[in-house]
Length: 360
Length: 126
Image 1 (cartoon, rainbow over the protein chains, first blue to last red):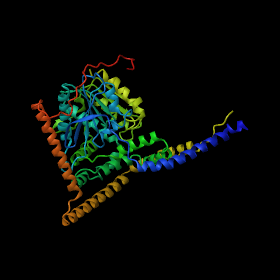
Image 2 (cartoon, rainbow over the protein chains, first blue to last red):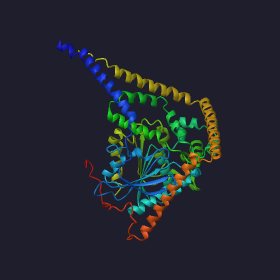
Image 3 (spheres, rainbow over the protein chains, first blue to last red):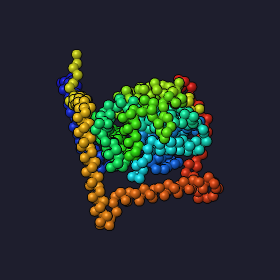
């Protein structure tokens, strides 16, 4: 009899018991979910050392007794908030870097105001990033600066590096950065030159609403949100799962509007003309050819990136003028490659190995 | 030889994963067509136009009632933030010019660690 209880029938009984327990927990935790506020994010201690228009420059307080000579400036994507790189203690890329001895700054973005609808690439590449670099230099007393750009922050970092070939950029790190915009097939179709009137959109809306940006991202995987909610319900008894879900969901839905002119340029120059890939990109009359960039570069791409497919990011290493260049493909998606449990094991140590020796 | 017990939750998850992948693939294929682009942009343009018309009407209504619109209140808030930012800049400039004057506290005045760190030797975990 005892052997029967510990056999298949016993397994099923204990599984049913477990599921009943979880069902009860789901009901309790489900109520808690709606009654409680989302977990705090971006809590690593920092100071805002410069703020103007859509730019916010943070300096994170060092966590080690000795830091690397060259400071690191992270340039965030203009579509989302920078706290994806500082989700929670133990799950924060910024905290990891601080503990490894880096002096970390972040250029994060505010939503552009209605009267800032004319902000363009020229403002981001020839004003905001250079201003941030100058602030970092003044704050640290160091001439050299390392830059790390995530997604479109990577594109802006490349444009900055190409238009400021004389320095002071010392090393460049790009995460999931597109170069060949023809390869972003769905975005190409959404913004097809034949059917998408970008001038009408920008002229009537001013800044491009965040809902439009969010919907475009969601449409790339239309079933995934519904499925993730089923998974949430299934795992709602698990506090850690719920905490992580809420942090990432909050970030994903916290999309920023884009300045109208900047969006118009992105659509026409990058999506339609593919100017960065073709080497014809200019910003404020300055040539922004990737071949002009000579700084050492690490480009990290994600194997299952549905937002920036590998075809779009692959040509970066081939086109860039640097001789010290490396591309590394890591398991994960567009977000999980930089944040979350996979990033802790894969990307963060890889970056530390590459950048540590180049930061002295 | 022991048989693996049936786990309905694992089966459900597997089914859900297959549904997600299948649906996303099917949708990606459909959204890659020119017809989809045409319809999406026609609808998007119309929706944007309707949103703007509604916004304009609401603004006129609030103006008639002598009430500020949400946008105007947001603008005032943003202006206040801009004034605060300018004040911070002025304080920073004053601090640089007169570092000894009391009350002008530089936010990042904490002492910094020396910039002498070297990477750990290869193979080391520290």
